[in-house]
Image (cartoon, rainbow, N blue to C red):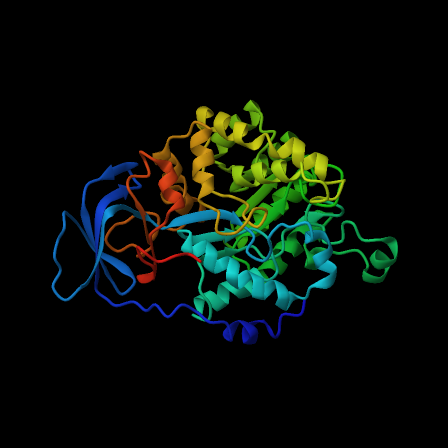
Length: 433
């Protein structure tokens, strides 16, 4: 992809004018303690220089501080979505756009998607696959555009013909002209390829490694669950990733591909549709995380009913696999598998991420646990210790919703306040539109 003009184009994009005004005192009616999962009473959170400077019970006046009244709200740590794709969004045109759009088109779209995600309460995301997103991450970090903190995978690693092979569906003439993709393009077929692909992601500036351990729902291929790596290839990916300090996220629907990925030592299983009791036990033994992405499952199952939304090779997979993920999440929670929050947004519409909380609760997961999955548990998956809780010295990533989301989880759909690194991006009374 031609990415040279990307930053110049993004620099011309308007950004929100909000600036930090330290110190800032947030007067919260309630405070969600993500360590205990309890909703505490009124607290004042003092923010200075992008960090939480103090957390005190009650409404504590702070001399010289800008006060923000959140007395009718519950303050929580900023939420993290561990599975998004900010460079795209599903539509009936998705499969043809790759032949018509340039990288700059995807870049412009990603700017809007990023802002919607932040204003929905998600101050951090892990983007698991997209060539544009590492550049979007850099633009956000440089203050050129508005969006969440991003851990970017860049191009996902796949096998020939597997989910994330970028040439799936190409005709023979186009395939002949372009030639078979290799490790540079994220497609491998050997242990040596596996090592090279990880090293290429390092060269490209990725923050995390994403692999597609099984077939996928939306790829232009028949199988949605067959294993797509040999165990030695997976071990080579994980070992090489470890050398560079990377964690590995594994897209996986089928049982055998999941088993191999867990045995190889991946950090997380994404989707996990056909997760068996045996795989769950192995995940508990190895400490592997599970990111359900119920929203994506429900979205594709619903769209599979719409004529023409998906190609016919995709439609039966979407109908069959998508409908099962919520049940898998329920079983995994009961089995004690470690779980954290992710949506696969980009499959569904960006900005709708918080609806995953409702689906988790529908699956029998307590609202407090669902909130922990998007805060302190997500921080554990990322391997960071400076976010996910509202405590002195932590990043000032804070979200507020009306009422008490533990008692009424629907409150998460009405985010009233968003702060990231001490900068206020949304206050009560402001619309997301």
